[in-house]
Image (cartoon, rainbow over all chains, first blue to last red; front, side):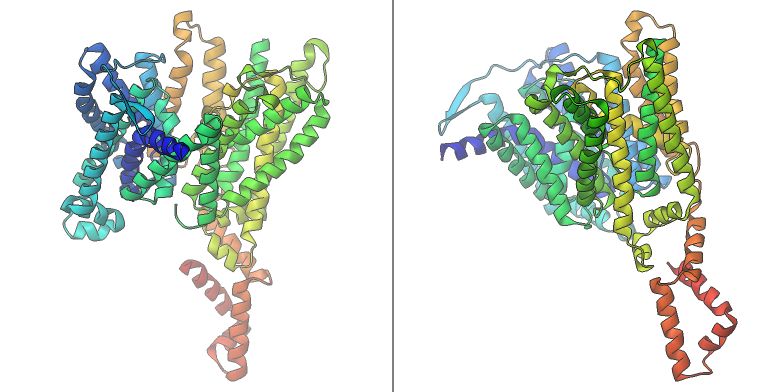
Length: 284
Length: 352
């Protein structure tokens, strides 16, 4: 019993960056219909923007969260406006857009390394208190991260499923022609969606960075599992991404408690391939 | 000079990988993003058999070939029915699994410590590297010739037809899954064996060789050169690997402090080049060897002359039925002079 509590507790705490990343990723996948590997760099950039504000400018960690997320959102919008939108308008197919996003991810990642170097950066953590809860411990930082993640997640959920804006996004993703005829401006909606997704990636990066460390490859290391979780959760289903990310987090921590952490990753990846295979030719 | 021959050998390995990927993606349309997974399986299997089990190069190579066929078949069985985006994710996951297992299974691969030394098949003193280079050259030239011949053959056109419209090919009586499986496994085994052959070049294997950058370097080369052209892989590898890794890293006079930046700058420029090509010239430097219309023309010819295809049988059946019921039917009458059959074929092709 205590094993289950431990697994769920650690899993949910560790899954918080993944929940954010998967929810944002799935929005872009839903709207534009391609896997955006460049999204992983949003995670890295979020962490680096936070380190710029937090370490270089000496702001408190909590104060630097929001501006860093907004800056990442802006980068995401810029990539949409200057890379993906022109490509889509020139008729680049979805499978080629994926390769394009890989190219963009290289440019952003190695551009960052050329600018700031490849060394690990550590964020200045705020003073932390230690809590115990049902036999397991966690820091105040982890609790705050968890609260922020769930606030963001439920706001996003509400935005997509309960508001007029969400209806427009879903309409545009399901039937772009019909949506345009109904007077929805695809350009504006896309900019909003890419901004929100970028903010989510930035927040994911900030929390990933403060729990571990910040380096230029962190986004790349997280993108595969993000893609996995979004696909298993169902394309465009923010709800599905949320649930799948939590399940993946709990599974990872459960397997990690039994054996080595790397085996948890192997098991997740194998499960992912088998789920895809079981789904068969249906679109991922 | 020794470094140059090493770089050139590595270039040949990359060219071989790009050619195999050209068969998988350019001809079959299977987006294999796990190139480094297959390559790594071959390379590490070679290392493990040679170092841990002390087999000779040839023995190890034969076992690697059998093992890689099994792995490739399993992967083919898992991914070939999926849609392209799912295939891409599954193969990327495969490569990640291979990389992780190499780190965890220390009893076999020595983990992050590294595995060595891997011997060349023959040692002839100072000339070993040159002899091995000549062997790789012959092998890769052989692969290129095979690809060129494949493009000219009916099989090559069939593969492209499956890529463009698998349902239609299946309806024409082709066992598309089996054909895809055969060529996917063949190309994947080629990747594994190229990995096995690159093990002696590196001599000492470490997990940080099995990184996604290998996959992307091959993909970038293929997409730049022209993924559907028979010479695209070669052009792409010469432009990327040839210019950056050989010309610049070997000959360019760079100061030591700048030399650290060069590999990162290279990957940055790879990305930029890839983006520019995809946006401004999606076919790559070289356009497809066989334009799509020609592929379907040739298939239509097969349909007219070949027997046993579903559509021909259906047409014959309709004509026979019609002839039996109404001997003066316009269908059976025109059939005697035959232009109707041609027209029907063309309409069928256009409609598809």
